[in-house]
Length: 290
Image (cartoon, helix red, strand yellow):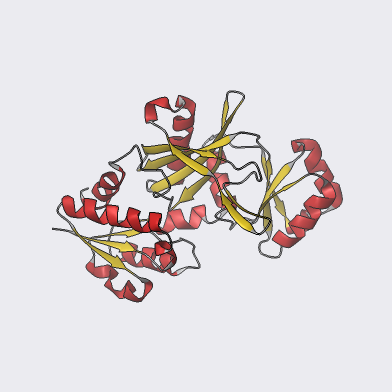
């Protein structure tokens, strides 16, 4: 019998969906003959006693989750998410650079430095990319610090806010679509496919609109019904990052498939596993039965 540690925090347990997903994961592990223990940050010292670690709390190089991941790696314990994946996916400059180097299709993307944040350069960017333009602060997650701008003055206003947090800004072409695809990938293999329908009030998967948090609608899609280019691009994007567990966001427009970003620590409770009952079995096998 192997011991699986599931690293969580209070926020992980903040919704019934998340709690239900964690219980499902525990039940599958036990059905497979493994014992499971939920580890909170105060339990971090127990990680070396585990045979594998599955992190189900927000990952960031500045969070305790990264310490947990590093601790597992230092002790030779298989871990999702691994430290390298956390570092890469938490830095959009690093992530997009890897996608570019691997030839993965992404929107037209530029990296704008603090020293080049001038109106003449911004006007050039609009001529190169068109309008509107998406600006991202590199450490963004959960659609935070991602904004759509229509003209150079608005660009400069938003960029000045973002540049306080980073020396660089990600500048991207806006891709119009009715929905996003989310492709789950584990160790270079397809894990699940979802369709994220974006609310009419925003262009993001999650956003604050008139003081209210709005979310996209998540629909699990059978793998055979997902377009081949979408799943192929999703797997290619994940492979450009590593061999862990990733959620790849894509848009499909006018027959083209474009990767928007790669997320480590993807959600599994919002419909992602509805048509894929073996999601947790695959993750646990990857961690404990290599």
